[in-house]
Amino acid sequence: MTYSELMSAGIRMLTEAGFEEARTDVRTLVCHACGTELTELLLNAGLNVPHKQERRFFSMLERRLKHEPVQYITGEQEFCGIKFHVRPGVLIPRPETELLAEAVFRSASGKRVLDLCTGSGCIAVTVAKLGSPSLVAAADCSEAALKIAKENAALQDAEISFFCGDLFEPVEGTYDIIVSNPPYIKSGIIRELMTEVRDFEPELALDGKADGLYFYRRICAEAKEYLNPGGRLMFEIGYDQGTEVSELLITEGYTGVEVKQDYAGLDRMVFAVWPVQNKESKDV
Ligand code: GLN
Image 1 (cartoon, protein in one colour):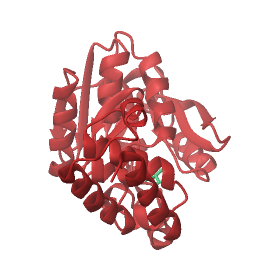
Image 2 (cartoon, helix red, strand yellow):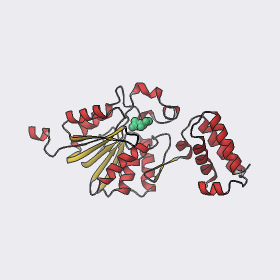
Image 3 (spheres, protein in one colour):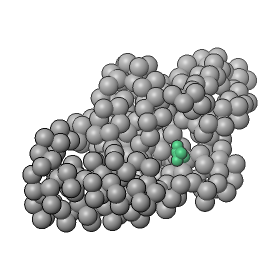
């Protein structure tokens, strides 16, 4: 079987099973199974595929046919141009989240940055590599996730302090920027997500409890002790949570609350400032 025949066979199987991105998926899987770049693969399309590579491709294709995300099959996802290791213990970094990482690294120069609910570490590592922060710390409640985040930091030679525990509980120090992409899907909606997400990605990373706002509520209240005066809180949010998260921030005494959109024009981020002169310091 030639590489070209292998790709056609794979595309046919995925298309017949109703996969919309059959061609892209197959190209990625063939490249991975054969350890080759796409350009090389296309140049060599007429050559015969060694049996070992063919077997490896079809076993990967079988996993994809069961709707396992391509990124868990290949074990990697690019984020802001950086290659990240991903496994089922962490959410696969999303393109929308690149916008949040970008907003953070652009304003991180000389700052102390904390990434809460870091997962794969994609935000923390990107900020450490592309911003010029004075320090980056990252926290997560999942040891499995932190193991992957540490791997990603090591791969990129990014210096990050890691904390394992429930939100701020293990965190030490104060910060100029606290960034978080916490779980924000309403528990009741998780069942309706696409199979790839629902059956393969960690529920722990998705479930924002009954109204999806559990983590925002806690982070808004608890971050005050960890933010330097004038420090910023920078959140990713669900497309329909802009108003609610803004209200939470205002109620907690934050100022300069701004909702920002993703490339699809949907509300995707909320930024706020912990004021130098805040309500609580005026009271004492
Ligand atoms: N954006 C993710 C999704 O749609 C959810 C990420 C999160 O809960 N933080 O699946």
